[in-house]
Structures are given as C-alpha cells and as structure tokens.
Image (cartoon, rainbow, N blue to C red; front, side):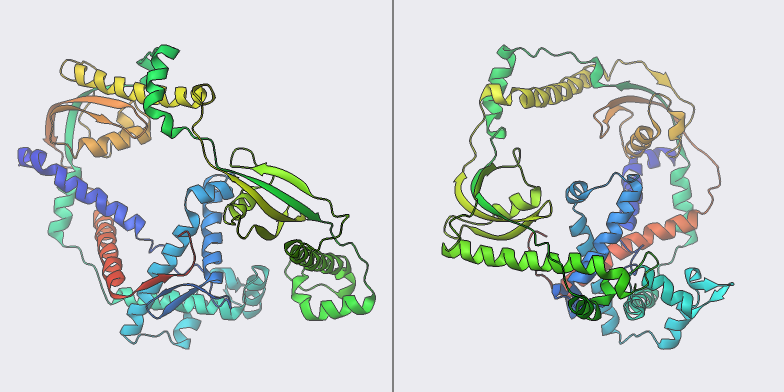
Length: 488
C-alpha cells in the first residue's frame, strides 16, 4: 500500500495543492465587500451586468488597503502597478458579475426582509448590543457611503450567497480517509542545501564581452521625447460673500469635518476659495491650451524645454505615459497637473531607442551575468553531487513538518516538502523558487496513524475551490465579457 502511494503520490499531492490554489485564487472570499451605485459610465459588461467606473475604483481601493496593510504601510502606486492591482480589481468584479447573471437566470432575488435581517446582524452598526439606525447612517456617512449604495452592495452579496447555496459541495467519508492517508505518509530523509554563495565566478572584460555580444539586445536606451511646454500660473483670487455662499449651496457636501458632518459656510470659506481658484486655474489652463494649438499665445509667454524618458523624467510617470501617446501630427497635450501646477506640452521630437554601449551597459550586464552563471553553475554542482552527497538526516517527517528541516527557513522547507511529496524519485534534488537547491535521499518510509483535526473542513474548502474555479470557467463561456478600458 505504501509503495503504491509512493509511486502515485505525485498525482495525489499535486491535486491537493492545485485545489488549494484554486480555492484561494477563485476570489470568492471577499466578494460583496465593494459598494455600488456609481453614476459613472461602464468600464465593462458581463452578460447583462454592467461594471461601473465607481465600482472598479472602490474595488481597487479595497485591494490597495489590504496590500498596504500586508506591507505595513509601505505599499505605493508603483507596487500596485507591478502587482496588477487594477486588473485584480476588475477580475473580482467580473467574476461577481458572472454569478449575478447566473442568479438572474434562476430568477433569484433578495427580499427586503432578508436584507433587513442581514443588516441587523452587522455588529459595527450596533449600539447597546443591538442594531441602531442612527449609528448605521453615521458609520456610512463617515465612510462616504450612502445607505442606497451600501444596501445595493449587500443585496448583491446576499444574492451571490443564495446562488451558491443552490450548488452544494459535499465531502464523503471515503474522501476524508484518503486525504488523511496522504497527509500521514512520512519519509526519513538525508538532505543537503546548495546555495549560490558557494559559487565563484570570473568577471573580467575578457569573459563579459563575449557574453555582451549575445545579450546586447536586452540593453537599450529608453525612447525619449523632446518637449516644449508652458506653465499655467495658479489663480489666486478673493471672492465676495455672495459668490462663496452660492458655491457652498451647490457643493456643500464637499465640506465636511473629521466626523463626516457638513460644516457651516463660515468654517468652509477658506476651502471654498481654494476650490474656486482651482476651478478657475483649470479653466484658464484649458484656454491657454487652445491658444497654444492655434498659435495665438501672447508674445510674452514663457516656454521651457525638456527631454523626458523613463530614466530621466523631470515630471512624473503619469505625465510620461500621456506624452508617449501623442504624436508629431497631433503634438499638443491637454493641461497636465504636475506638482500642483498645470503644464501644457507640445511634442517636438521622438528619439528612438538605441543599443547601449558595452561601457554604459556593463553594470547591469554584470548583474545579469552573475545571476545567470551562478544559477547555471549551481545546477551543474547539483547534477554532479546528487549521487554521492551526504548531508543532514531527519526523523520521519510529513508534508506538514517544515520546522523539522533546520537547514531551511520555514517557508523554504514548506516549498521543499510540497515538492518532495509529489516526487517519484528516491534520490534527487529540488530547486526552490529563491534559487537554492536541496539534494535529498529518501532513507525510509512509513504510514503514520495520526488523526488529523478538521480534515473534512479542509477537504470541503479544497473541493469548493475546484468547483468554484470550474463554475467560473463555465460561466465565462456562457456570458460574454466586454472590457471598455484599455490596458486590462
């Protein structure tokens, strides 16, 4: 029995871990946390369900907050871009929309009674241990949400839950027994960790230059843009009381205190003046832009010039992105706010990317060479020593015994064990994601008799993950998804 499992555990363990990833990646946890009701235009449409710009922004903001918490406040817009946060936000909303289409096909709905019943369970709206309507309104106001938006979001969340309950996933005793057997397989191993620290390299020009010849296409100067621009001087005007009062009456929701309550006209005057000046500055910048295009700027206008690229950017990444999208046939860019000042750009010339010289590329080339060669040499060392190595021996360990592999960190050991218990080889090596290589030799194997806690619950999650992933794929083929924004 143990021999059979050793031969076939690769398929079994891989299935378990793919299921785990499917459950996490399905994105079902957290659905319904986003708020709806924005009047903005649709950014996507899934079947008959539209996704608005407001929904996308709120979904993005929630994800951003979660990542920022994970990174202990060190998450920024650049990291968000690297992580594809906007794409993640849209993916969550499209998956949600697929389920809403399915709910519609079943003619499901959430009654007012069901909605109220769920509202009254939410403890952050409690006062003295029970739901309080005033607390409810205050909390939403402080988070800049209307009751209509929140209740629409909650209604959709409940509708999705109701839909999924029609598609139950069950776990049999036999499945639980199989999983318990799998996690009780134990190996006693001898292992040795190889790292790149043991690899030495020669990095003279004689070695690097031939390498450079094969890699030079990877080292290019950035495309750069020669631009001319004019700055719009900010408007700094004072306004009479009638003007301030009129603007306040039309826009009073802009002016709130820290508790989310609208402040009085008297307290808001400074903020109103700032808004009026900002609006006047933007209007003036647009008029300057039109005059610039028509060649009708005043003779005293002051122009500045710059060359902008990814590595040499006197403005910011957003400005560079906008400049890169204009052309010499339509060279003027609408006013762009840079450090609080509107800039109106004219594209003068596009400088194409060119190959860097060996001298200019050497620092980056050296980094690439060292990384590639150390990886290659470490692989060669593993291949040459796997049949003869002698390392540390362990007691009997299971897939859950990462802490017993003292030569590895817990995360490294977890990755190693996941791969070990999906391998069919008695003696071999496993390359970790951080580049380390672990040589191993399975000395003995046995089946433990430990009873696992909450195994049925874990298996339910695994099966639900597979089912959820399959359900989404099925719905994607049934309901057309249209994306109306570029870059996603």
